[in-house]
Length: 253
Image 1 (spheres, rainbow, N blue to C red):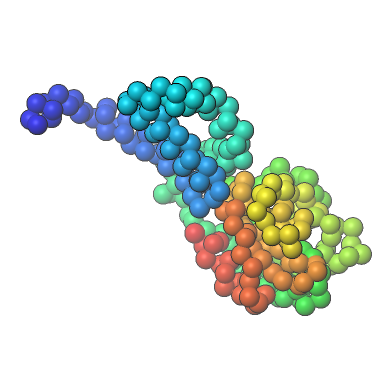
Image 2 (image 1 turned 30 degrees about the vertical axis):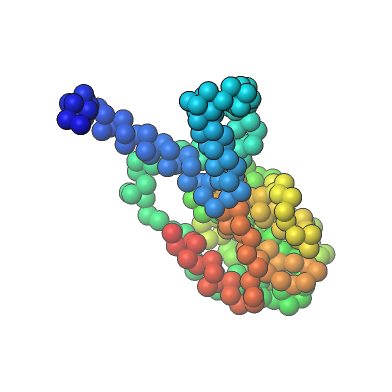
């Protein structure tokens, strides 16, 4: 045992190397946590382990099949995880070494007006899609809509989502406590396990939450129910009055 430790050459450079690899792996894998992509990634890791086991115990047919599959694994990863790769790179690009210097959280003073607007939209069965930007900027999506720079007010949100308004068909994007865009176009989720009762608004909310850290609020036009999406997960609220309590912690971290 002592001979094993004698052969280990650990120095300051090795420590830096371990730290850098740890940071890299964390910022690449953390956005996958709790998503369907995490299960796919776990499956790929298992296939790689099966290959090494097959090779070690000379299971030639299985090793040959897995070897040929793994030859295309890089292309498969790019295709399957393209949205997650974009999200991970954007997260890493925030300069992780300076994260501890950055003041966390988003302004939450507008939540009272937002709560009132969503409650009225729900009671009137008016469909709505509201995005709250967090750390990852949504500039490209903001530019797809009508750009505004307005204070958040329940009356304004009700006017935007009124069926007679030219801005109602799309998403409102809130950034830094202000409405920055209306009628914005969001990417749709391609999930096949989504309940059929959820329509385009819910798919758009999920699609954006899969590609960014934004919090998205959906008001159903058919049922008047309110849901929120975050990190690729959809949660239906028992009552619209829950909204402020549910999203405030998400904006404070």
